[in-house]
Image (cartoon, rainbow, N blue to C red; front, top):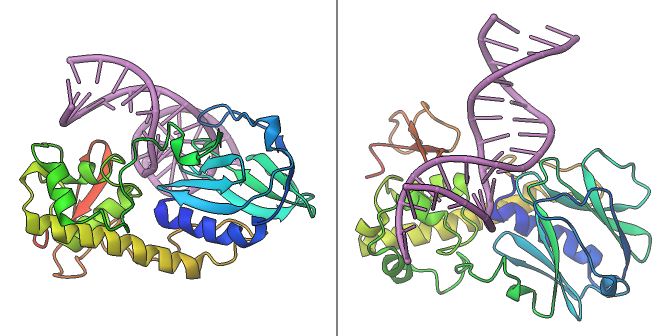
Length: 269
DNA sequence: ATAGTCACCTGAGCGC
DNA sequence: TGCGCTCAGGTGACTA
């Protein structure tokens, strides 16, 4: 379940291996991802000049455009020898000079692969995305301004990619715990001070997870995939009924928009 | 425009 | 051992 930290870790993992490599071709074993995979002939022979990330999208950028990869719920990208045995869910190989390939694996096929000519950020999937949580733009006043008059629960508000990107269910739970704000609170009723705590918590939660991902997910190349949050400490997610790490109260659970939500009723107001 | 729900998909976990 | 059920979740599409 790649959330933003895992995507960033993937980016860092593959970058040194594909930078400067020429794309010799590709093998599509199953094009039925979230959208049918279709790559233009013009991609052949191009060289990867940059490996970028925007929200949970990875961009393998060449001189003429960008290959846009989303890992969905269960996707992974690994740099492996081409002759490595093919698994049941190894849907796409991107073949590079030198004999290796970038292998896209995705059991649930919720992910996607597109090619966008020119500036990859102009792709329709990326066009209306909000700021990165680590950007200067994402701060208390931004959150406060965008949340006015909105009645949605703050948890859903944070998970809206038009507001801020990279906050999936797990980190929405964690960040709101960190901020001491109850997930059910109406976004429009948050004070500026609460927005400040939330902005800081989102940024810190994700930054810390990326740092830990860098250590727990180090061995990317040619290895088996690993769960992204392995060894990561989560304060509330998945801990319903257990003790709050801060005050010891039992953590409560409910569903907001069919998504598991866990919080501490005494720490989060 | 906003808010809520559905759909997509498969593996894991569970009860029987 | 196996069947059938439910759940998980990112996010675009759809509905009210």
